Image (cartoon, rainbow, N blue to C red; front, side):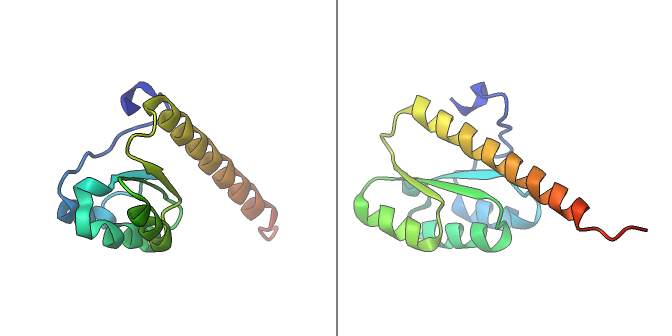
Length: 119
């Protein structure tokens, strides 16, 4: 589904949470999509790691119930959705988040240039 969106480059599909948690030094993704049922008890650790090590990374979590939803938000997830959330809407949300990230980076870069000392 996500491979159909031109702005999205999938760098990894990981089903083993321990592998994901070791990848922090190797990749710096713009967005991470986590399936709570895959991560189980390691979900909160994964969200915390994402937000600590990749503060600019958007974190979307797919959950099964409202209890897990609240835990994911409390851990720092940017967006928490039901696992049965429609795929087309999920793709649209991801596109919006990536566009927002790009605009934020552009703004930050232009502000950094404007604040630079003249030589």
